[in-house]
Image (cartoon, rainbow over all chains, first blue to last red; front, side, top):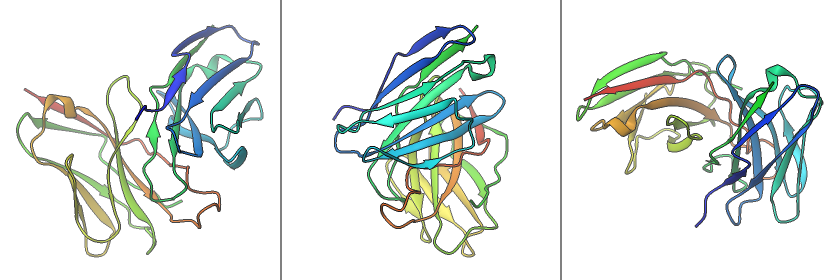
Length: 113
Length: 116
């Protein structure tokens, strides 16, 4: 079956703009999580959505938000972009089990100029 | 969340076994030990997980210490394709629907170099 897909794969924005990233989970998966990866901070958990509800959130400012649609697809939005938001944004999907595998997409590379 | 400690980097020769250690001295009795790896320019991928007993799958083996305070990921014959960052992660089994299932806490991991 198809894996997790993320669009776009690459994005260049300027400071102050906002951006929306999209993630389509594996069919049947209802949990979608987002992560930010930077060379300095490594992989950091942003938030998780399940059945259109955010049920877990990491330590990121309110400029980072997301939502999930009824088909489990998820979007992540970053407003008022800062240079430090340049990163690889990864999406992962899974079934509703804490011991279940998380499947990651290839990521969206965001560059903020 | 319980913390894991891994060496920053390791080297191996191609075709030889690799043992990647992980210390998790504060593990709770119900924490599962998961391993993920991230190949260059890709998202992380699941490798293996276990609770108490040693586990084998087509990718690797997981050896868990009797006191569960450490574990070792074993790649039986390293290939160049196994060069990646390997992450050891502890996961608490929350109640389904309780809100902790999609959250993985990544440390810095171990960067494995495989030499031909």
